Structure formats: structure tokens, C-alpha cells
Amino acid sequence: MVEPNLIRAAQSGDRDALITLLREIETHVYRTAYYILNNEQDAMDAAQEALIRIYTKITSYEEKAQFKTWIQRIVTNICIDKFRRNKPTISIEEHELVFREKSSVEEDVISTYVADDIRKAIDMLPEHHRAVVVLRYLQDFSYNEIADSLDLPLNTVKSYLFRARQQLQTLLHEYQRGGVRG
Amino acid sequence: MTCQEVMEYMQRQLDDDLNDHEADALTAHTRYCSDCADMFERLKRLSAELDNLPKVVPAFSLVDAIIPQLDLFDSERQESGIAIESKLFERGAEPAGGQETEIVPISRRSARGREKGWLKRISWPAVTGVAAAGLVAGLFLVMFNPTSAPDLKSDSASMESATASLEQKDMSAADGAKSKQSADEVRIESTTEENSTASKVQSKSVATGQQPTEAPSSSDVNKKIDVVTPYADVPGYHIEDQSGTSAPLAPSDEATRNYNSNSAITGAGSAGSDSADAAADRKEVTMIAKDQYGEPMGITSTGSSSSADISNVVPSPDGSLSAAIVDGAVLVYTSQEGTVQLDSGKKTGTISGLQWSDDGKALFFEVKADGGQTTHYKIDTQEWTIASQ
Image (cartoon, rainbow over all chains, first blue to last red):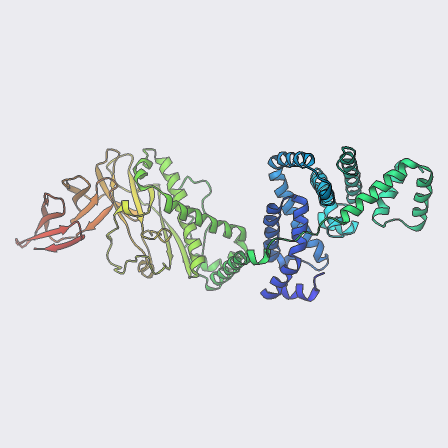
């Protein structure tokens, strides 16, 4: 995804290379933040913080790790910190939102509503389970890459992912039986 | 194969993690176990939906948005590099306890021997922290309400020294931030002098930054006391310090140093300096020290105080200003804060006859020289000029 030569140039002090590199990864960084934090504004803040940290710490990246797991580690750490701080206020609002949208559902918005349901269900997962799901599905990471990014043992990654999917499946199944989806 | 085991196979199948043999076993099970078949269907559907989650993109370029912060980081990093190379920036660990007003002593001489260690010692997060503290100090300067300043005075010496310590830290922090922003060379030097007569330590700190052009600077190196902009009109900066010297007048011997400046952040008042080159940029402030009853009892000039004789205190008709003969010179100062507004300079001879005009706009006095001739002087408190008549 990012050219090794570009990374090396950025590390050697080439500022233009570093900026180019940041532009290449900013969407990936933002996407992870968006699905972990489930909030556009928070995601913008977290992603910017992550990009700044990458800019300032680029020299500490070592090639023995994959670059993409290195940046995902930075952004997930920031998000999990943020998530811990924000959780008490956010959870209430989010549940109100779920309730409102359920009562005003219309047939022609069902397709977008499916994604919304999943987003809400993801939001109910514990932080590390959520991060595992996001890296698996939004970044297309393998078990090993997820383990590297989150600094978790491989078996823990699998167990988090499996449990998360099972829980999501249960939640969405309940939504369906509640008449929201066909 | 139990349904529990099959569940794991199903999960792994979603991630393409099954070999052919395992995949066959899974298919064999779901063919006759409808519960597992249903579950597998739902999981596959969920996984497909997760795959299809909208690939969101930021509403605007995040990199463009952070460029200013990146520039700031670069210039700070560059600054630090320059400081290291020029070997002029030396900063000691500041006292954490806040009980003493002194800054850990670092003489320039000993600093040279430790330059190599300095790079290692510096904590880069601390540097940014110092910059942040500088901003806070700047805000403080802007927001600070000078009229409440006298209330800060306390009879408790420990309280004061703690306050002074804090504010002094803020000041050096402000200097640090300023130096980064203005990309100037910075030299912070701290010296500590042991007071010979008392065990207390008097602190002197010299913080010299190249001041921005709009900052007032004293060009007259030899002039000990500068005229200060009237206190109430400018953002004020108070440092209350235990003078700790031989002033014999009161137990709560407090001296108030008042740091004033027209420009909020550049108000780095500096204390008694050992280096003449530093003096060119700095602005000295002199205060009349008062005891707890508000009676003048000493004079303090930027860090060093003296127990000079103060006599013939004459308040102006409206009471806002006072004039006094101090150590052979006439000083005019604000009655409330004690900020010296004008210093006549030392006169050879005996000063007498301090007299305010009725409207308080002028102060007259006379100096009788040893030879016998008398010179009359007039101080204009509007223009802050002094003229002999």
C-alpha cells in the first residue's frame, strides 16, 4: 500500500515524501477511527492526532514491522484512549438514536439502514473486540496483522473476532425479529 | 464433531482459514444439523455485510488541516537544534517543590562542561510542555486583573515564596515559548547567590530573550531605574518575592516586584544581571516595598532590595501618587502598588522641600549642594519629566 522507498525517504528527513505518505494513508487512518469511535467528529480528531503522531515518530518505525500495521497500531491506540474518555456520555446518546430511528423506519431506506444497524451493533462491542472487527473488515487484515497492530496474541485475536461476530449476529438477529428488517 | 467445534470451523471459514479437509467436515455437519446450518447462514450474511460497510472518507483533507501543526513541530525541532548548536541555551531542572524561589543554579562556566549531557537530558515532551506553559503564562498576562493585585499580598511568607516560585516558573516558561516562536537565540542563565548575612537564599534569574520590535527596551544600560508605564494601564505581572536581605524594618519583610510591559508576553522582567550585554535588552523595574501597614519601608529593584532610607514621604493631593526621598534621590511612585514612576537620580546635596502642586500635576523640590547653592527642580507627573529651574 505504501512504497517502501517513500517510507525510507520520509524517514531520512524528506518532508515532501512524508507529506505524500500521510496523504496516502489518511483515508485508512480515518476509516478505522470512524468505525471504532462511531462518530465523524471524533474520528476526524483522532485521525488527525494519529497523522501528527506518525509525522513526529516516523523515524521510530522499523522495517521489521509492516508499515500498515504500524500506523493502525497508532490510530487504534488513540481511538481506544479517546473511546474510554468519551464512552459515558456517548453511550446514552447512541441508544436514543437507535430508538428514534427504529420508530421512523421506512421501506425505501432499508438498505442504508442495514449498514446503520451494523454500525450500532459494532458500537456495543467492547473496545478491543471492536478494533479487531474493524481491522478485519475495514482494513482487510489477517489474524497476524491484527495481532501485530493491537499487540495481542494470535489466539486472543481469533477469540475476540469470533466472539464479536457471534455477538453481532445475535444483535442483528434481534433487530430482524423486531420487525426492522425483512 | 460437536456443534461447539463446528462453530469455530464456521468462524474460521469466514476468514478463509480452513483447509480442504476441515471445510469438508464443516459441510458434512451442516448438511444434517439445521441449527448449525442456520447459524452459518446468518454468520455468512453478517460477514458479507461487514465487508460491505461504507468505505467512508474524511470530509476534507486531514493532512491539509494539520499542516500548521506539522510546521510548528518542525520549527520547534529546528529551534532546539539551533539552541544545542549555539550552546547558549541552558536550562536547569526547576524546583518541583515550589517552596523556594530560586532556580537551580547553573553558571555559564559549569554549563560548558555539561553541554554534551544536555542533549540527552532534555525531554522533548517537556519542551512542548514548556511551550504550552508559555501560552498559559501569556494568557495569564492578558487576563490578569491588575486591580486585584494588592490582595495577593499575604503576610504569610511561605505563601508568598510559593507564589513567587510558581510565577517565576511561568516566566521562564514564557521566555522559552517566546524564544521558539521568534526563532531567536535564547540564553537563560540562572545564578544563585548566597546571602552572606542570612541563611536565606536570594534568587536572581536572568532571562534574556531578544524582544520583538514593538517591545520597549531600555537602551540606557547604566540607568538603574526606568520609568514604568503606569501600572493600571497595562497587563501587569506580579512577582512577590521574599527579599530576604538585611532590611531590618518588619518581620514580614516583603518586597513586591512588579513586572510591567506593554507587550504581554515580552514582559520578561529581568533581575540583577551579571553580564552587561544582557542589560541592553532588559527593563528594570523598581518598587517601593511596603510593610503590612502599607508604609514604605524599603526599595527593591528587580530582585535586589535594599533597606535604603525612605524619608519625607509626601502623598499627592489626590493620594494616587507619593513622593519620597530615597537614598539621595527623589522617587515618585504609585501609592497603592508602590511602582516607581520616576526617579530623579541621585543628587549631590541635601534634598528638601518636597511639595506637590495643588492639582497634583507637578512636584517641586530643592537640592542644597554642599557649596551652599540651591537648585530647584520640577517633576511633571503628566509627561514624567524632570527639569531644574
